[in-house]
Length: 229
Image (cartoon, rainbow, N blue to C red; front, top):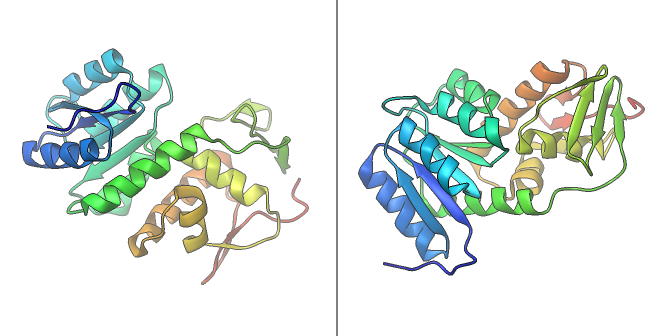
């Protein structure tokens, strides 16, 4: 068994399929991470409260308490990057998962190489948030230094990925970003299946901030209107 150094980042895996949890844990430990595993929802919540992991890999379908409720509970105490895993492959599941605080989403079966890439990308973003002055888009105010968003004077909760996506677009007003560019610059990887993840995050941002904030350029990508501030 690979022993992680004392300074290693801790990852909590909440997954009821023992073979999947063991395989993901073994690969992450080989990459130098410390890994803890829980096999059901209540145990997963308790694990996160006790260990305070740097990142959570969370299955959607769990016994006891499902992954959506677990995600809400562990995000209630403090923001932590969440990579959600599921055997489902519908837009509804994806959107709901992102809405309750998941930062990224993978559908089973998946490659271990891609899991590692996404974990590292999520940790990089959490460690090096973008910094710049306050950006205004119509009634939306984005403060990168405090990672706060307000809309029409009210605070709006965004997941870390939603915040970084909005910041990337808002910092380049009028410029259209392709889905591939957003995957590379915001998520830190580029895979063909990732386009749906980008689209779902955009839908979530529009639901929280209003449909006019981000413009779709059909066949190309997304943009924040120049002069919207």
